[in-house]
Length: 169
Image (cartoon, rainbow, N blue to C red; front, side, top):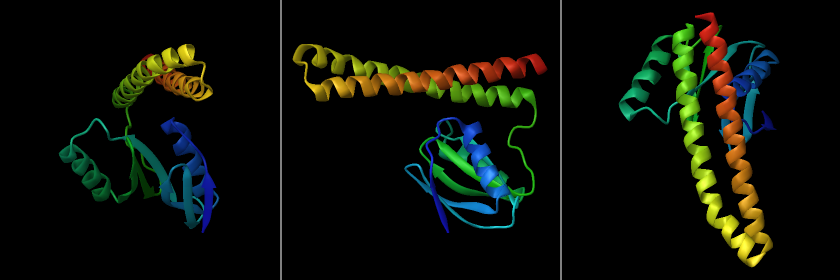
């Protein structure tokens, strides 16, 4: 059993990390608040894929889980807006540029909405911080604004990936 702490908001980076760990002989067993738990496996035994599920209905999610299971894969865990899948050997969830573009557009939309919410939440915090000069209000305003910028960075990353994929198609 091994534990590693990592925080990802970029699904491609998380996939790369999980696949690298699989290549070293460690299969993800569990995830909670940035803490990944791994168990030993054959090096490279699994390929991991991460997919956005928050914009799917329960029925659509169950169809996706069944499709993965029917293809020999498994749902390892869901966490927040994401689902983590694995399969022995290689596998892809989105094989053609058009479906990959749709996936990144979905992810971009979620992160744009999250950024907007964070910015809106920061406005009253900034107002209170300016009015009171209280360190806690200043810290909260800065934190909410920072989170919004992290989400905007992911919007930019998705837009870049979409542009690259559109050039291929």
